Length: 364
Image (cartoon, rainbow, N blue to C red; front, side, top):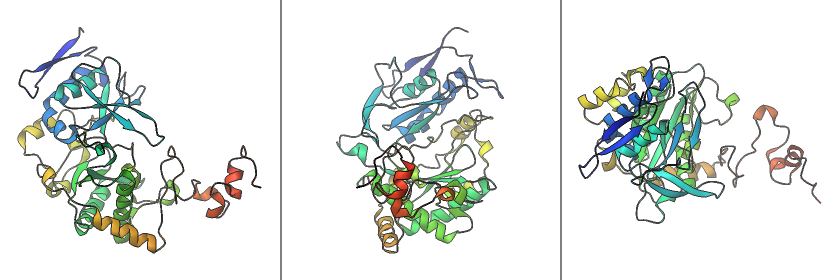
């Protein structure tokens, strides 16, 4: 099929046309959904999508031949960036810095589909005139991930308990389906804390939820320690960790979508209710369940008090993602079942550390 053109509205009302090459390429083989179908979906929910990711740096999860083929995450903007598309320079945990796409209009999101993007992964920061804006998240994102033996209903149960924890912390939570088996809960916050502080606030909230639901919820980083519980993935609060955006399709059979819902509806929905085929009609028929989001900006002050309390009680730092540099106070990065030494021997220069790193010279 020849290239297709998708007409997108623009803020000035003039409109913009986006070329879609290989429009008949099948992305979801189980449904026969094509690249052009996805471009039309993104255009149709574009206003709602922009309300959630507008002005945010975005990582693109790309599938050049469909969900059954090669997959990669694109942080640097793809080549051929249209003139209307904005980028911003981001700093990563390694200290590297490079440009990242910013979605300011529907045509940019549709152009991402042209580059074979299925899922958009925005950062929890907004680009503003403040030079510190990219280092200070303006939303807390809590990922409730059911482990084997648990499912969506268990994540929903944890989400309702989390709502109460957040309220006790002075925060307002907004739930969405993950598009898979889990639930994501977001909280708008004032962007006055750096990523590490926000992560500590999330850990404190996660630990409080774990105390209230010890048999159902866990903060254990190592899978062998989680059991049949819902894992609160606190590391999603780290710099350079992103979650599938609201209204983003997921690369799974059935073309599910990560969908914002109200608390009243959360207990009555299933992940399969929200797909590339169904969501445009749902969006057109209902009011935005997150319409009050920007009016509910909170503060992490209470959560940080919980973090300080836990530190005083001997609960310290938790493990970081494996690609992070070793962080202050972090426990050993060794699977518990393979641990052979005391924690202090795993610090740099300790016996365990040296045995795990034989390329290093011995102490002394």
